[in-house]
Image (tube, rainbow, N blue to C red):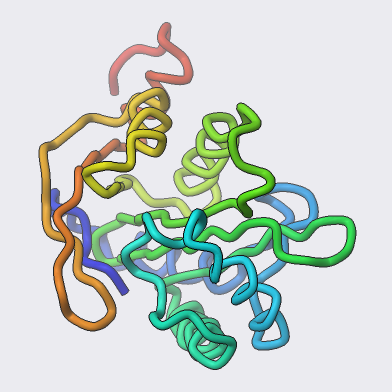
Length: 209
């Protein structure tokens, strides 16, 4: 799992328990059509998508090298995290049942916080749907997972992701080090948004709470 957001919130025991329950019981269809929780049987198809450097190169927390075995182990590790209420890996499937994208939600229930990492298959990129899909995912994290803070990172040269994140209204907070699975660090751009800020962005007429 990646590092938690810079801003440290403190959840009550009841809030933490509720977030863990939501993560464990999450319905992937609530994120969109043709969404499924990743299982080991998806390893080969997900590895095929991630083997494309256009998909995987900008993402720091993927297992490397990307092989069917390493991806299967990653799926299994995330399933164990989900059983604790701390992560969920959701895939989108195309008409042929191939993996067309993935979203991995890392969750810190004791801090009411989460992070999102994901990618879309190369042939589905640059269709003008990135911002809409990201906005849907951010709202889903606040509403379905029940967290109060989202932290996001992007590689310093990942201009496309930076544009999507800032278009959604996230506050830029400079740079931070992102820790790869092998322990090495990648310098990243960093943003945050709270649930209250999200609601005001979506409904500018809403009074601050």
